[in-house]
Length: 223
Image (cartoon, rainbow, N blue to C red; front, top):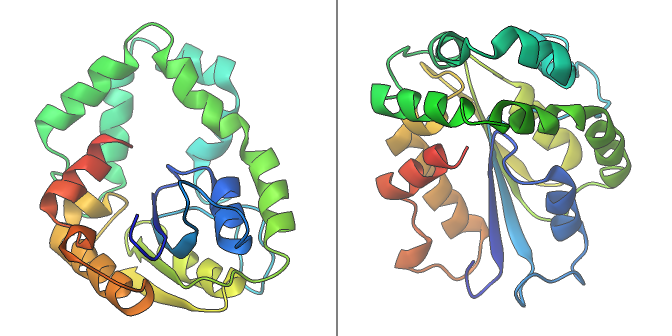
């Protein structure tokens, strides 16, 4: 948050997409006394859109549909959490060693806790509802500026193409030599992009508004 309003950053849909659209579209809706002044999306899948060339992320990414069936996924993954998570950290990256081993072990330990695997799958079950609500909420283009980046080894042009389709002002693109784990693989790059975007689009900036490697570490740990 700044004096001008909220700087919303979404890394792989960690923020409820419906809340993002509401904050950005309705200038009468306030959170903590401020409104959104920008929206940054990093490796964010956009569901429910409709524009030339659009491909629903559920088509190329097999795990999205699989995770929507929580019972089958739990049956297949339970007891194999280590191998399952390592597949994503390795194969969804440009640099397979980008996520430190200590972090991988932490994620595995958390997923093995009673109820955590199924709880993490609940999010995927809402994808159809999310797609429907996103389609309704983006009938009119967003008024606030958007920044959208995707890794060349992951979502590619999907992020920036979707942003341009739903926002009156969108910038960003495809990050070379990068996969899904942007904050781990291209920490300095994405922090510079966020800082520049906020300075240009966000209004009054100060030192507290500048992302750094510590910020990137927090974003990574809070996936």
